[in-house]
Image 1 (cartoon, one colour):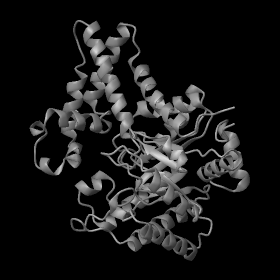
Image 2 (spheres, rainbow, N blue to C red; image 1 turned 180 degrees about the vertical axis):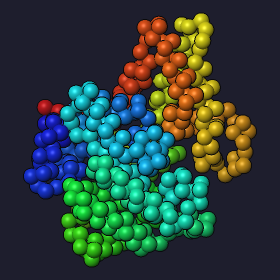
Image 3 (tube, helix red, strand yellow; image 1 turned 45 degrees about the horizontal axis):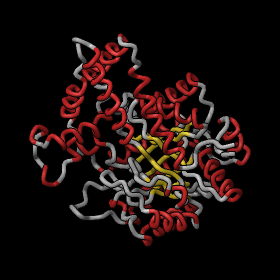
Image 4 (cartoon, rainbow, N blue to C red; image 1 turned 120 degrees about the vertical axis):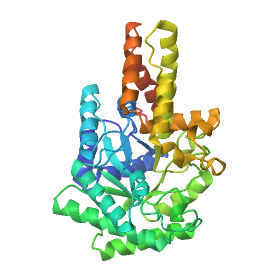
Length: 420
């Protein structure tokens, strides 16, 4: 039987009995299952970029009797409510409430993704200084801990003050990582809250983790630093590895992943892959002993495509009062300005209307996650659902089912489905 399935209380009891944070207990269960059966399991972390994605993830986890990790960025969920409209406690409460509503009793774990200076768009746009950016991240870490997050990705690998092509020194990455972990641990211990897990590193080139020397240097510096700070019981369970996937590639490099996994195992950690969206070979993740994988934008694309299909049905079934949702979505993405960060070098400075139809479509499909809560989008979506309901179609459930089906495919590929 899949040792990660079953009631959440049993998994939490294991963690409590062993004095182990929940995510670490999960990885220990993965290791034990591999020892017994020879089959490795990769944990899936879903980026909760909309309420539909969050609900679909929990439905998929319930149906597959699999654990669900949610990796929320500071752009999505933060003290300023992010683009989802959720603060940290709102997010945790919503996960718990919907789990109860649908009868999901498995492990739903709220996690922070990319907690570091200037990784929140607002900090870059508003020109935060380093000190201001770090203080903002520290305040976010505190809010995550207070809300009940159980895994924090500490990622100070970006420094906007560096020139083009410059890479931040890996020792500096370690130093800033230690500073943020120290801040988090001081608060957690002062508040007498349960132990949590940490994730470090990045898939981006900013941290220089594309070679084994930097990989080992980061972990060696962290090991020495955590002991010096008096945290012998604190260690990152996940190290983010550059395993071939990014925003524009979908081929997972199994050979590199195996090498990184072996190196991480020597430190007691496992590798986490980011940008695993639409990956062409997901079944290779457990074969490479990957500890986890983050998937996010892919589910926004499915939400967008499902809505496009529903709008086509609306046009065929309803004579008037159409939602015009596709046009509303494109206009909202353009207004948001977020599309600008994905412009290619030869597109720099072009207005949205000056881009090709193909590029506008890609930017809209990808950027929809930023504008699902836009008032005009909500109005158009409500109109769409109302029109469809009159024709006997449940639009919201159709979207949730489409996303959940894709998540279940990852569960299957990652050996996360419960088996008897």
